[in-house]
Length: 98
Image (cartoon, rainbow, N blue to C red; front, side):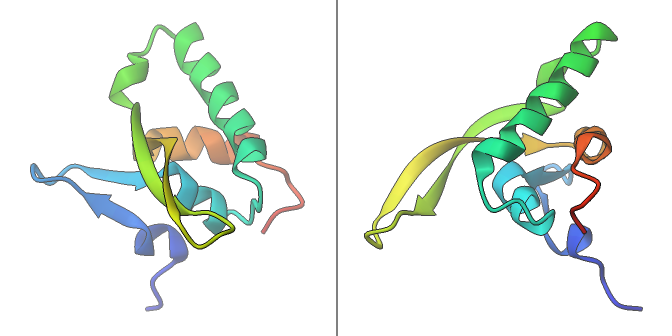
């Protein structure tokens, strides 16, 4: 069976917990501009807050190294996301995206 892209970008930490990196998920969901994708993250976080869920258990703030236009690398803010956070983000995604 062919592995789907969501599984291909899954990471696991030293304790075996799975997580997804927000910028990789944005790319996988065909968002060219991370700032547009960040709006989905914020909507999902708001839903978590409204349900009194522990936001920090599902959206772990981190920094990622990304290549900028000059070819240099720069540290930028991002998130490590749980499977549940990814699901909520996908619920808010643009229906026109694949």
